[in-house]
Length: 114
Length: 112
Image (cartoon, chains in turn yellow, orange):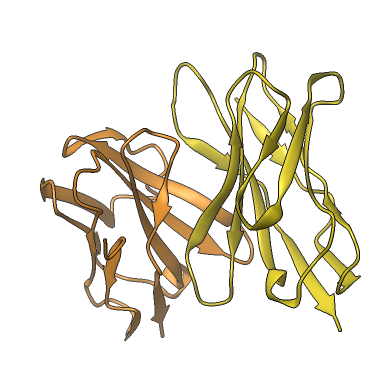
């Protein structure tokens, strides 16, 4: 069964600083990987996804993520954080066979300081 | 498109009462998912449907929970009888492809 670990529960960055949120997954084959963002009181919104091909994927709102098979990681990055990026971020993994549903990490809450 | 619509947005009920949560997926989407989010357990998949048919209900916690999808534009999640430990935010999501899931705003359920 697949699993996802987000080692950072809470991260604080200054506005304009760069951001990297960590995600490690466990899955026997090439996984499908996702990042979602949840603003307070809202549902989750898909930021970006990786299925295959280019290991650096671009998403919405200026986010990108890099799939590194050797490290079983799919870290989310943004070069310059805006105050509106304050939210909770979830990494998720999906299997390409068998039970085809997403497994979510526990989330990382991002706080942005002015 | 209005997105995924959930009702009610907030529900407060007493232990032992029946609770029904409702979801209208995005038109044309053929997958529908019900999730539960709590501080302790995070985001858990309860059940998902494809073309109105339940595909995987292994996440449904117990027999007190049931979900139906009578047509392509409506689904319900019912808890009977409700217990305080059912207090959570319940999300509905829909998708055209299984992984491109669009989430509704959620229903915050409080069972006292």
